[in-house]
Image 1 (cartoon, rainbow, N blue to C red):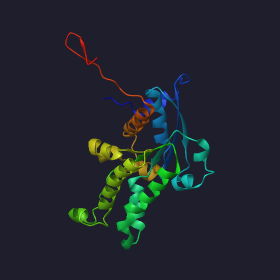
Image 2 (image 1 turned 45 degrees about the vertical axis):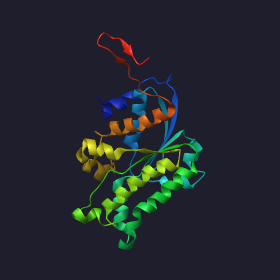
Image 3 (image 1 turned 120 degrees about the vertical axis):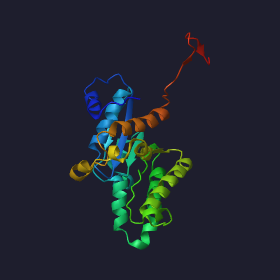
Image 4 (image 1 turned 60 degrees about the vertical axis):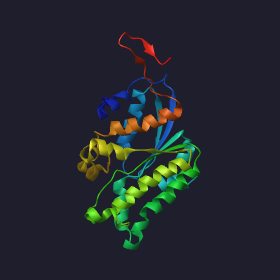
Length: 236
């Protein structure tokens, strides 16, 4: 599959989308999300949608969900995209007392349960691409308090939460890193200079993965016709 570039998606925003069906999407992140919001809107045009996107202020996930008078509730979205980044999670992990590090995943899961239970619209939650802080080396999988153990536990529990809450869906960006590689997923210079966790190269894929969930929930599917060599249609 050929993906448009980030610049292609930006150009899409200049197109006339007045006749496209409207989707109201809220985007909340604990890192800079300006480029991600552009990518999602541009990919929406690519897929035939006009996206009205509410982008919360920087690192305001908790405040937006806990304050019923926040812009999130006032916007009344059809879908909420939540991006808690693995790098911010690692930063939080490093600030915890050693005695609390084994509770990192459960603490985050408590808040995610609150998110899923506090709204009636669909919540699309990005899971966590793995970061190995190398503190425990090969023993990290045996040490519950290691960051690698906690992030793997968190990703597993997110799948279970998606079964518990019918309005909660996991966007598997961890698999994108497994497929495309960490170097394509993350740009150190963008992170240091602009607090952008996702590289420009990976943004179209993340946006497509996000929109694929939205499209499935909206009832839009890609259909495949199977034909014989003489163009005879099979399957009815």
